[in-house]
Length: 160
Image 1 (tube, rainbow, N blue to C red):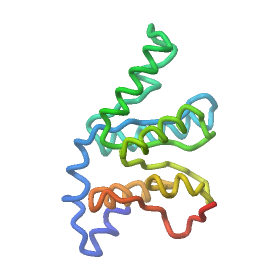
Image 2 (image 1 turned 120 degrees about the horizontal axis):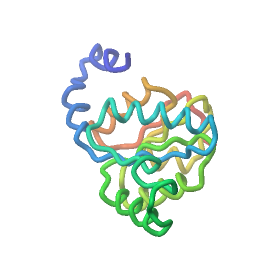
Image 3 (image 1 turned 90 degrees about the vertical axis):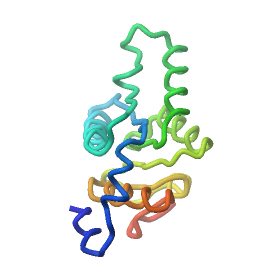
Image 4 (image 1 turned 120 degrees about the vertical axis):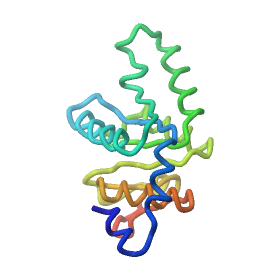
């Protein structure tokens, strides 16, 4: 586990990760294909494990609800504005997710991009947030976020 690796290097993960538990997290990602849905399920599981408060558009505001499209948009935008962190799945390059991440970046909200199985990432992602491919890298990005609120892209990842 990545946390144990950090602790073995003398990094106090309790101070860096536990306080992050109380951040308000916006979970962005498409759920319009089996691959997107599987990845978003995994990402939501990670968010539920590490954070107490989250807004998940597919559960909290979506077209299957009684809300109008305008109400869904307004609710999503307000949830983004109130968020301390955005965690986004890049699988399938969902247009709504791309918009949400761009908006969050413009607001200065830290972003963790979840990119399982992807070796090369776009420059705009790499420079606007932390890019992770799996649970271990997600945990390391949380530690890095708690440490300096900086962006973190793993060295073996190539940037386009």
